[in-house]
Amino acid sequence: MKRTWAMVCAIPLALGVLTPAEAFAADTTPPSTPTGVQVTKVSANSVALSWTASTDDVAVQRYNVYTGTTLVGWFTGTSGSIDGLAPKTAQTFTVRAMDAAKNLSPDSAPVTATTRRGHDSVGQVTTIAPETDVPWGLAFLPDGSALYGDRDAQTVNRLSRDGKAKTLAGKVPGVVGTNGEGGLLGLELSPHFRWDHWVYLYHTSETDNRIVRIKYEHGALDLASEQVLLSGIVKNKFHNGGRLRFGPDDKLYASVGDGQTSANAQDVNSLNGKILRLNPDGSPAADNPFYANGGNARYVWSMGHRNLEGLAFDSHGRLWESEFGNSILDELNLIEKGGNYGWPACEGTVGDCANPAFKAPVRTWKVADASPSGIAIVHDTIYMSALRGEALWVMKIDGDTTSTPVAYFHGKFGRVRTVEPSPDCGLWITTSNGGDKNNIPDDTNAQFLHVSLGH
Image (tube, rainbow, N blue to C red; front, side, top):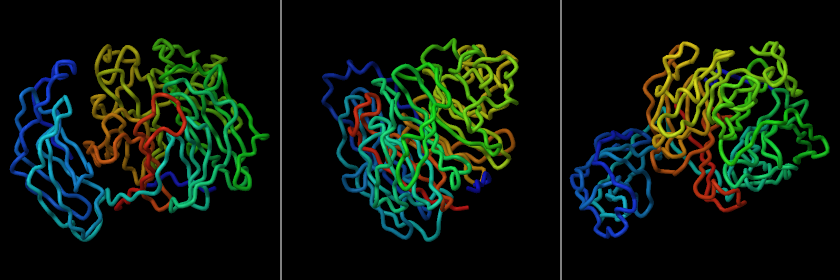
């Protein structure tokens, strides 16, 4: 299968310091109604709004924007952009203020705007299909349909391009949840899938995290073909990592979390807290930077990572990675062979980050604004999902840095987990709303969404 690598907002405003949640337990007074709601900008696929701040007896936490009774975005400041809209369509919005006790103000006066003709760079969003489990790994088959894994149900499914046909390909043997973030995680196709039919999977087992491959033949997983390529990766309730990505060098790159033992990240002999690089048969690549050390170090491509779930290559073949911070800053990194990215001494730009041995992140976010699970690169623009931030962050690659990141769909779809380039040079994204911390199958309210892109 030929692989092409050159595929190719809200304004925050401080609203006061919130005291702990228990201080609001008896609060039943809603904020005042937002006033002065107005349209400030209209494009083909977005409408920007602003409004006057509400008052509250404690503090306003955020502002929800609705079309009818449907929440289409939320913002902590007094302005925001509602994205992903259809062109040439009338849109009516109301705004409600919410406090920490989740008391909601009455609706503001409605405002209406009609989107323009044409197509924005980040365009219309359409729903492909609902999903009741946690869709995690995702890759596209040669016919344009998608193969994806359900983390908690431990199954691989095929979804047609239009989302109307979902077919079970099989349940992956030996997958065990962790009552947290473990289970069936990354999924990637062989670069030569048309001929060899290998599907690569990263999953938690009874004893560890591991990378396996299974052939996909005649619409189903051939479980008898399963091969364990790498085992012994420490698992834990959280910080399992799990993204798989083949590079332009036909090597398999795997993101591995620190397993909730931060010291693993700085131990070159540990597989955890690393990006690993393997040959397609699972052997360590001989030109890996620590190959001569022997043992686990042979697999290590980069180190000093906490919990990394996003990997993508740009048109120059460079690897970019997104990473969850602890409690301060999330990161976007440009990965170098043998690079050390500082965890646990350095989180983003906080801590012992002046150490010359550490590589600095390209971009950082407060953890509440991001918590990035996946990234995709199309035409050298990075699209990064945000779980806690409930957004899609977008930035253009500019040499070794990027343009200023811009958040799209803020609060519109909830927690955004996986983002992948689609065959039409758009994006498929998956959401992860509810049930994503317990490994109970089919207890989520997730979606597959398509984002059209203007190039």
